[in-house]
Length: 506
Image 1 (tube, rainbow, N blue to C red):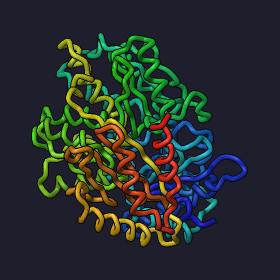
Image 2: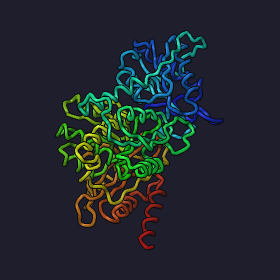
Image 3: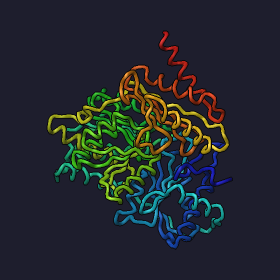
Image 4: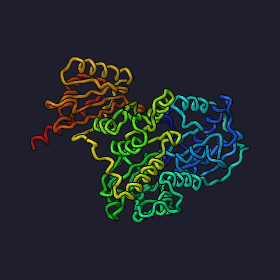
């Protein structure tokens, strides 16, 4: 098979279960051997590599396959078994566990029949360009059946949990064994790899009654482990309300993303999650810059400004956001956070590692501190203006050259916005084209962003309005400009307009 076809951004992902499986143990072995060959070609040969996996059914076999690929190259492997993606990174800097690199067998929130591989070096995950080089090596490397490298089972999660426990004690400025006494937290692991977090909180004094789906189960029988999934968020929301908890936390399968709900069951994800962690950080470092992806709301930008910060929108893709935050810091900009609306959050204090569990830990520290003052965590969101209407549509690109087709769309919209009253090209337009609108006599009270997907021949379209009927108004304006385009499928946009118009007449 063509190994390039399983590339997804900076990871490997594909169907791994059933008759249509393309990511098999043998294929995993080839990718792992290619990774070793790539590092050797760089003059940095691998001697020891750690491998972990999430709870997916195919995880053990793929872990063994990847390990065999490395062992055939004479590399020793530490088998961490069930683990999280952030823990696999942290192991590279934890005394007693340090290896030359680590691999994580995971497909994040994707369906149960999928799996994947993440390659991690001491400076972080691979870039998309580096993964291309790994794949090129994997296509030509010879995978030896002679396993000259050793296979050693190790349990890293206790060491990782101690890092989080120490962060809680430091954040609360206490040496107490149980610093979270009096805080009730419901944990929903979605049967992924993060169920141990409930035990960690309990060991620190928190009450975790009502926590659910903590047992690893690759069938994901209760809900998709995804903080953006409505069913998953409804499940944790209901659990918090049913148990009268102070807050609830939910992770994706490999725990690099997370979200929370407050004591009323209100979801705090996407823009709310960004606002919450931004408020906590800006309270300590006024004037700091918060890097987000491009689809964040106007209300969030206003909120960050009111907290004394600078909102910096950048391209979607968690590596893009993280790399830009690192670049800004290197140029002298005070930037403590890079975060996507999907829940990928990377803090400077944590090596700019996108670690959902670390993010939640910081939020729990603040929740405990505020509770001691008679306040609740959600009070930090007071003043966040949220859109009255919003929609996200995905428009398929029909042209063979999706980049050229997208360029035509962007140029047409930019030309129109430049000469149309009430249309304004956003000054922080760093991906696709973002247009602000003056709706119903107001000023810049609506916006749309259309961009080209990082991975697929799709142009995602986000529209938000602060006034009733604004989303329909902007959608119709966009459709009027693009309706004669033949290289993009507009039926989702057209159907949305029809549904909205019909609902007005019901």
